[in-house]
Amino acid sequence: MGWWQRIFGGGRTEEEQPLAIPAPPTTEQIVTSVDAVLARASGKAPAAVTARVQRVAETVHEMVPRLDRLGAGSQQAHTVVATATSYLPEAVDAYLRLPRDFADRRVVDRGKTSLLILCDQLDLLGATLDKISDAVSRADAVALVAHGRFLEEKFGGSGGLTLPSAGTGQALPGQPLPGPGTAGPGTASGPAPLEAP
Image 1 (cartoon, rainbow, N blue to C red):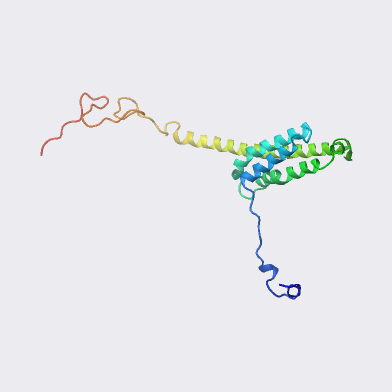
Image 2: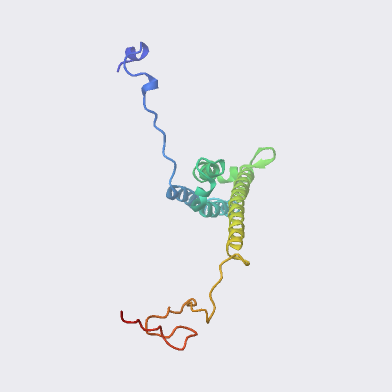
């Protein structure tokens, strides 16, 4: 379609054009992203940066299998994914593009060097992920406590499940039930023979 047709409405309108929505990153892509950032920082950034990136990467590794517990479309799940695929890589890569002497010694904002600014950003990302991880763990702990109370109400006390004891004619766990022609527990002989009609 030429520019003349686009101006005067020829062909398909913008509303008719299909929207291409990118697919969310997979678990593998999320983990690969943080691992790649750690690899880029190792050997090129000071130990203070590498240790902070390692902390964020470890928390992302821990959180990725638990993202489904945060709920589809939740802000917390988005934060974990965005940290791994956007916030962390952009911060570290911006620092790595700077000459080392400039990045580590030149004051650029409010008395801080680029190195200190990056460390502050990494601390903020690490603390945020820690809070999300703690929230998921607390939710799991609450669910475990609730399940324990349910089991206690269901099976504990007088109204719960009672196991048979020896001498009741019932098998205990791990013991076979008595078959025909064998003496049952607490009986002197086997079952009485059938009478002929």
